[in-house]
Image (cartoon, rainbow, N blue to C red):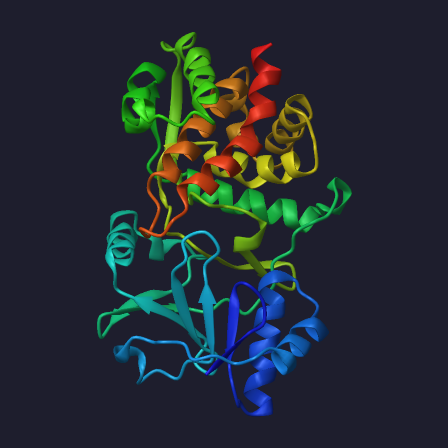
Length: 323
């Protein structure tokens, strides 16, 4: 029997006070939530039976996480500080990526291993911090973001012509009426620069505030690496900042100014690569983000909702640079 405390987390019923407090603290830290609200939800919401795969019975499950967009489940043993899931197709691909990109050499990659046909990963104990306004992005946070981008983007670097790189996008014939004009605009802009060189590198693929956990201001772990792969070298930095700025109604030129200044101040080794090429890397980011929609982990992924989120993110930005 589990009790849903919000749309993402379910906590097991009838836990000891000590374990329950650990569970509540974990949920609060994961989403920067109000602990009193989560406690009240646990006390007042009706418990329900959750069907758990039989092979998980030997593991003591205290928390179930239901992912927001993929509708799959992960399980947590709070005493052992581990998170685990079934070895389905997505997990198999992820384990291959760990070996392919030697992710275990990256100090902020959580230790991951396979046992009894299950995938286990060390649990992040720290906090993530999502600022409300621009002035809340403090020096420590900027330094941590830069450190992560610097380490990941230093791996698997290649130089490639835009014209050749565009051949990687198999979705270009996808009929998505909502975003068709956006995709065409990205391609139109990139075609003007098709003889230009761009850099590709290793990328986390879903780098954002919610996935960066720190303890006392220092990086503990970067989590959720399922989308790791080779993309344009500025994908992660754009994916980190652009959605945050768009949700706060910043325009393209304000976003460009901030990211370029951030690179100049915190990632000077990448300054030359972005110079006079911001629009190019932005359009590549748009295509790569769209490609990610078609590599969802489960068959239950809601592609229509994903198209809407994509449209919200890019519809105004692409208008501003196309005019």
